[in-house]
Image 1 (cartoon, rainbow, N blue to C red):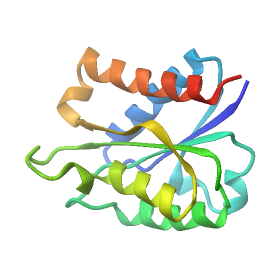
Image 2 (cartoon, one colour; image 1 turned 120 degrees about the vertical axis):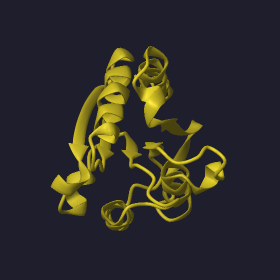
Image 3 (tube, one colour; image 1 turned 90 degrees about the horizontal axis):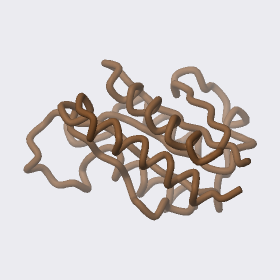
Length: 154
């Protein structure tokens, strides 16, 4: 059994809900999962000891919110290089915006380029908040977590 950390920033609760569904999916694959709000993580040492990491954030004005930017700097200091990393988040703005400007895509790029983590094969999971209210949205989150857990192996 591998250990997975699902860490998230959520202002309105939607990203927290996604985190819980993703964690549930990773548990379905047999992994041990911790779910934490990034605002409760104060030191890089708190990120040690996991085999895989999935970070989540909503998209604000086609960017990351300030707390997630600060957290990613902390993750860089934690020396997570070589670990599997995934990202997720929600948005409410017009879908015409570029997909690479959503917070999860920015997180994935940061994990790969700055933290030297291995990017999860499914990439970043980005969902419109309205879709999250459906069975399809819940299943998309669970599937993301399950495949992440399966990718880690036993």
